[in-house]
Length: 166
Image (cartoon, rainbow, N blue to C red):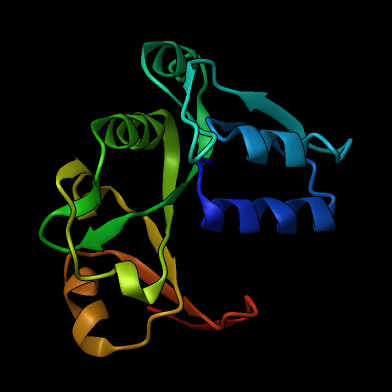
């Protein structure tokens, strides 16, 4: 799991469910929250801690991440489009997301509707690298290009209930 408010919301759900999972994250706040649940094993990636996001970045974080082989990469997006894929403002975020995607058997992207159909400066990986997109978007003009790029899309209500999968 990378860092950010969307992933923190997912971490809260994992703790509430007392899910017996192992999580690797660069998010200091996410690892701290997950560590409150004895059923969850949380690994915090080492590296430079960014003041604003409380996420670790850099070579140390990437080196540690390379040691893990994940079943799922749960990645929050800055922007997602069918043409540019997963994009970020910062190279360090894109680099970690790219490595997470490579180290996992399946990649699930979490993105709100406002992040879809847009691009940011740096591409982490192509849309083809997304196995499942979970979003609150329902607009076919936004979701259509992603579906055409063979991205499975799950639209959910803000309360987390699944609305449709295609």
